Amino acid sequence: LIIGWLQFLIDFFISIKKRKEIEQKFPEFIRNLVGAIKSGMPAPKAIIHVANTDYGALTPYVKKLANQLEWSIPLQKALKTFAKDTRNQVISRAIDIVIEAEKSGGNIEDVLESITLSVINIRKAKQQREASINSQIIQSYIIFFVFLGVMVIIQNLLMPYILSMQMSTI
Image (cartoon, rainbow, N blue to C red; front, side, top):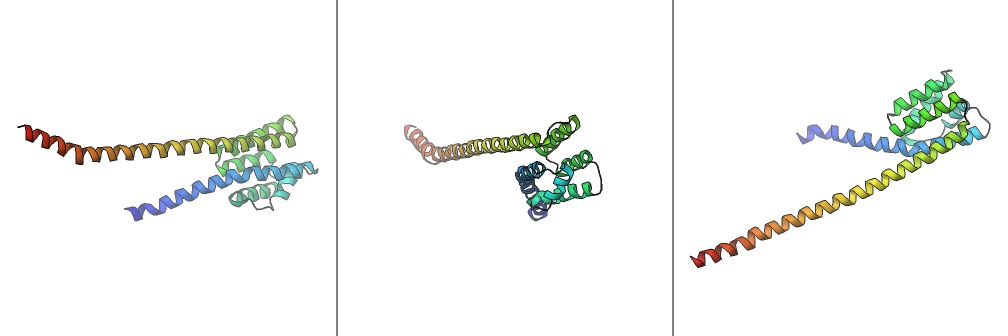
């Protein structure tokens, strides 16, 4: 039974690791994109230029985005596909903000910079929350094992003593 479920567990943990890496590499991708846009490139050309960089687990999605833009797929549609393919809520929200900024004619450079900062802040908040939860879990395990130790001591030492006291009084 364990061997049968082992492959599913391995795939599950690999997918979690991949999602974390995608979320970690996304701010780097955005920073590179902002740099390319600030140098004077339009957004689609900047994405195509930035796609040559290695972003780990995010690289296939960035390359697909660049390929879609090379095939003259509109930027908004390509970005929506990128967000949907990554299946990451943080990236999806960030892409939605970029699309809205482009529709309304806002400065995409500033929007991308603020998105980078917010993604970094979200990641820091998640790490702090995980650290606090992990310490609480460890504390709970310690309390549980101390309780078990007390119960074993009571059962093995105190109960026989009480029984022997009762037997001696009878």
